[in-house]
Length: 304
Length: 99
Image 1 (cartoon, rainbow over the protein chains, first blue to last red):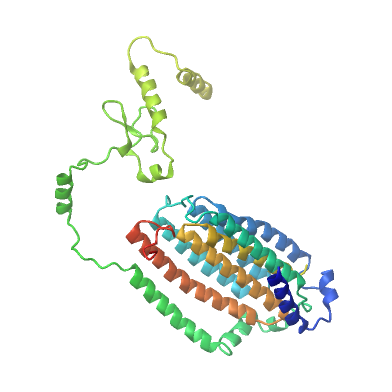
Image 2: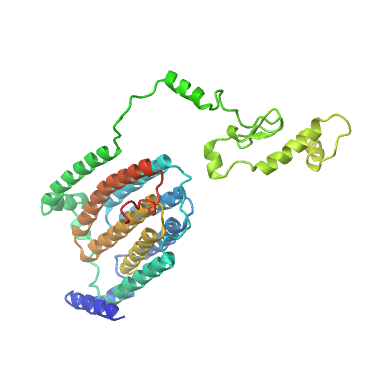
């Protein structure tokens, strides 16, 4: 609490230097900056962006988190466009939503979609402490923001008279030209670093196809191609394993990705299907299963 | 509408990003949390530029974007290198220097 009060004092000290002539005008909210349309935009974008950011925090799968993040990025781009920063808005959507998030998705593709978080806490109670810390941070910053007195918002109308791009270019190539030049050095260094990190030196020569086949036979691995999935008589789906000659399902025939995602048909139901099919093709008295008995009538209805 | 509302939104996004960095284990999602924090500060910069009637805030937000892009490139390359050697993108598994 004492830290909170100290922060309040510091902020109010700095805010006291800001001229506060038309503070009432801001309070009424009737100034031409941030009119009704912007208020609607604020609420719409908040309702879209805050749940999307929470999705980044809580989504179980990394791809969902990345897509939530892309939504936040696009939303921020729209907000910049509305906030008299057209260049930044376009750059935000191009660079962040277009390039950076696609880079993230590429990496997720390389790392594999099945690398989700483990739920084991290495430090006990770390999750709740972290959430409490983030909540405290939000409360602290919001209370500080609530206590600051701002001058009347000036807006960028005067500057935008010659164009937002012109004003920004005057600053970038004027006051901040040195920072701009250093940024180019930073970018080149980053590119070189990424190239070196991603480069893999080949220590042994690449194995030829003949060497690979010899190795496979030595190890006694499967020599024939893997069996294809979905060779049931009744279905042709890729999530159904193939049947071996003895009637048992072959899990080798399923795609590794489907198995990792848990999207294949469970083996238990496959075994049941096998029983049903066996009973179906056994000559003699044919047992009536509900599913099988219903199927022809449905077909007849569909035809008529 | 008071322009300060955008600042409140920025604070919320920043806090959610900080929570993501602290809570999640997947290094890629942790990295996205860092990106969310940078974006939230950008929103604050743009809003302050508008409140103060100067374009400086937008220029600084642009520089933040540039630095974030460079950081993403290097950070993702590091995550990928760690994944290649340890077959894991979890931040808990990179503990060779622990003891």
